[in-house]
Length: 98
Image 1: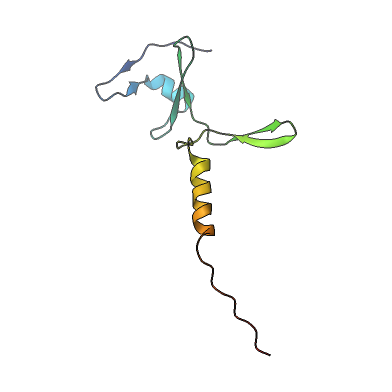
Image 2: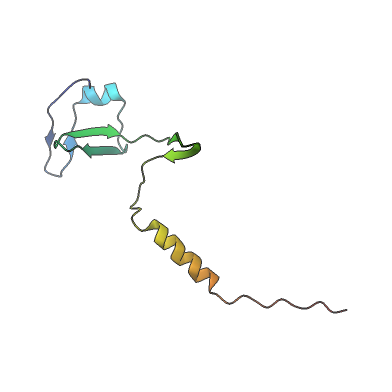
């Protein structure tokens, strides 16, 4: 790890970073930062990377990326949507006239 600096939290809950650090790291307004906490209550602040990482998991290439939304019930919601569309009545096919 590089440099350690002390920062403060403003009245709105924002973390104030020195301009020199923002310039050196290329931080711009609107960038998303990720806060990670470990078991020892240490916190790491990093820039969310835009491009996902491809990883080989036992011969299968998978994408390792951070979600921008809660994925707790995503599988269940997808199954529910499929069940709803599969239960809709289908139009009857017309028989061909000879």
